[in-house]
Image 1: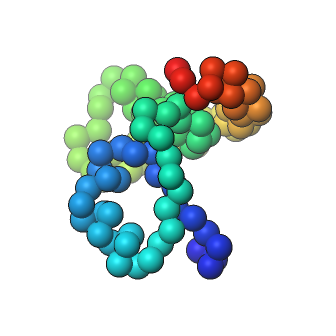
Image 2: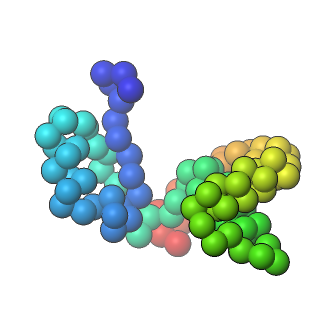
Amino acid sequence: MGADAIFMDDNARPHKARLVRSYLESETIPQMAWPTRSPDLNPIEHVWDMLGRRIAGRSVPPDTLHELQQALLQERALLLQQAINDTIASMPRRCQACISARGYL
């Protein structure tokens, strides 16, 4: 990361753990203030959701970490780039909806 980078997380419980906060402070990594319970507008979260649904829909779910890795790689290869592009293209609409709702769901 460059000197002007700011770390952003979504306030998930693991990201707010004392250990994580202490590490970020000790490394003097600047953090963006982010409201709790805010909508997640990051497109990668939606792609992860698509992959998660595909994994959950498998007739035989992965049992090990290695099987999960392989399943994710297989499902990512099958995931249409157009679905990812559509998610990214929806960002202006999602952002406008969030602004119109004043940040509330």
